[in-house]
Image 1: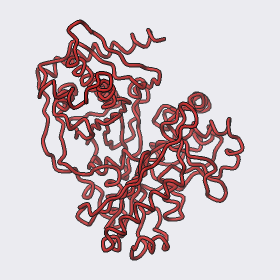
Image 2: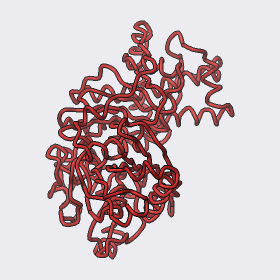
Image 3: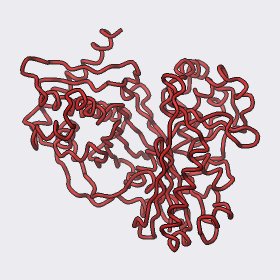
Image 4: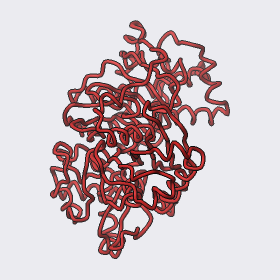
Amino acid sequence: MYIGIDIGTSSVKSLLIDDAQRIIGSASEALAVSRPQPGWSEQDPEAWIAATFATLDALAAAHPAAMAAVTGIGLSGQMHGATVLGADDRPLRPAILWNDGRSAAECAAMEANEPRLRAIAGNVAAPGFTAPKLLWLAAHEPDVFAAMRTVLLPKDYVRLHLTGEKVSEMSDAAGTLWLDVAGRRWSDDLLAATGMTRDQMPRLVEGTELSGRLRPELSRRFGIDGSPVVAGGGGDNAASAVGMGTVTPGSAFVSLGTSGVLFVSNASYSPNTDGGVHAFCHAVPGTWHQMGVILSATDSLNWLAGLLKTPAADLTAALGDSVSGPSPVTFLPYLSGERTPHNDAAARGAFLGLGHEADAKLMTQAVLEGVGFAFRDCLRVLADAGTTVTRASAIGGGSRSKLWLQIMADILDLPLDVPQDGDFGGAFGAARLGLIAATGADFTSVATPPPTAFVTEPDAGRARAYADRYARYRALYPAIKEALN
């Protein structure tokens, strides 16, 4: 038996699986986010511990025999959060989360301090990452910065409580801006750019490796015989990729959720910082991954639904099962800025081509297509980095709309594989990593893709029409940016 624990932003989820990777049980506990000032986002690290223990207590109560047989545990978690600990290994302040925007000025300072940052870290300095948050602390909370002895990511603070070990793994560490992503080791130069040293960093392991063992007193509390191994685990997207079986080079998935992710597994380090591509280590050895990220995917449709006071499902249902071609209206989905390819927090959305005939159906289609074009932007800059995607799995709430899937397939000119119903998220991927660490199994034999329910193939005629319309879409951002400035 194996446990996967996912420390998310809104909840902690723990999942129990057996040797055949069947889900035996799950439990979750909600988390609260604090926003003490506009643009800030913080969380109490002790809430992660309380929620994790509560989910494990719930699994122990519901499945005592299965819990007794647990031999491996894996961890997944929200990335980038700065958890600063003092000499007693206790948090000195609330953790500053991935969606906190206070450190924009520090990002510019960090890139100025270390001009090779993008080449080493594989990413542009952005407030979401961990390192700029520490520069902010040095400037605005110097007493905290001076008292800090260790910085941990959220899931790794939970690991400290589970095992007593200060350890991180490659995929999560790659989101700090302190990692030499190609070399899979801490970079002394990047640490120096924030006035820090390796002594303040956790030890690094691969996501499939042993990071420690569950404390004996916790084994007794949760009714587990022995001391299970705790795997390195993975950052949330990398762990989800393990859950989806996206671990071999060239395999990819499209996540059509509140935000959108195009995730591709790579055999080598392949950055494209000019295109806003995230290049990270994967949670499995000798593997990297790239991500294109858009900030408003289903969020764009939900915004339109709120504006029109009509449920999103009703808006898409009104379009039927297919569209004949591109809408005459074009939508830019930059409602909260954009990550890939523009890396522009100030970008804003727009409709172009509105006329008297523009009704709810035309605007809905334009929104679905605008999100598709944003994913095409991601596909384009991944190609610029040398990555070829020939097909992708489709997950997330938006993938439940067959119409949206067809529009996505036509715009991307890619077949999209829709998996059978199941839980393939971070907790499941973490459980798989726990299984690998406990058994020594080859990760490719464990992290296999789920069965496919159906495939959405692109239509050649519509794909050509969307390629023409994409050229217009690409021309709009520079024009809108100039107008807004």
